[in-house]
Length: 504
Image (cartoon, rainbow, N blue to C red):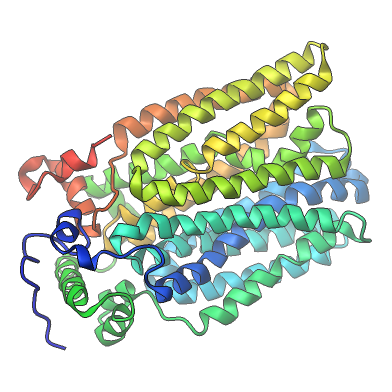
């Protein structure tokens, strides 16, 4: 194929707002290409695994405590059963970045499915809490690899004007998996071997994704950068019409030439040697850390336990109220898919954090009121309301924004390794919160625990204002330009990208 630039393409990069203003007929909508939607949904099953595991353990833990008295008597064992999956996810995410870069997004996804399915079998058959903990480790390895791979695979197959929404579809699958897990939890409450069924069926989506991914292609950008241009162009031709395809290929060729001039073997230490990559990683990893330290997976892992702390003692009622919370989480993510490409990543994160701070204050007030001994039932319902408000504000913003931003802020050469490192930061932060929440709540009280989370959310608000640029509608090359300008000044500027990136 002979590639020639379309008229005017030299002034604007394909997919940028200026390019699409010049050629509005080339703009794509979310549902204009069924092929892209298919790739997104298939990759997003990795998010479903992530979400299901997050949600299912919160309900299963209630019944695991009933079966194993040693677990019921030990907060540490309860926290370890929950958090051992996070240990696995930390290892999986750290290795996942390298696996993605070396072997591709497709093979990384297939590996994640195999490991996850094996872990689900071990959990379902566990004769004691310690084998169960081993199964949680395997499941975590699969989830960690998938958490790195799915957003990158989707982002690299997505047109820039809908990239945010399509990557957020992965977050929708996470929240959908959490909702599904609560439905499964409720369905098995009266079945013998309750928690074994809850944990065992988690292997089904992994088997389904494995079969689907065998029929799907590798990421076209990864193929192009690995010099398999014929396959890459064949895949891109199913995504773009011929006029835009030529410009996208030209854009990839420019990026490939830049990468060729750099070292091919990127190591973790290289991330910190380059000022612009260091700044990008600070923004991406910071967002991932604050996503967890503002308490989201505390709410999802322990929402039935929190509901019981609020005075609702029935296991089934606790699961039902948690199901409502999970449904709100999924619904909020659907709203986020629309807002992230229309409202912008930065504004959405700031709006979300404002509501998160307010709802954590409500939760803290409810538990302070309950501990005072007055009107326990009223404060119990206020706590449930606080949980619902938290999810309503968190899910459209701080849910999808960190994953979307991390899928688009790194150059191709660093995308796998930086994505893996930032996901590792997310899982480490997740582990710290999950492993300490019940112990901190016992030590200082649940009310003060939520006050601590609210203070962290205030810090997160300041962090987003200072360090996170706006990337909505920008191509990968334009985003890279932002970091060069921040690192070295406006000498790298061809158009005022930095000003656009700082737009609120």
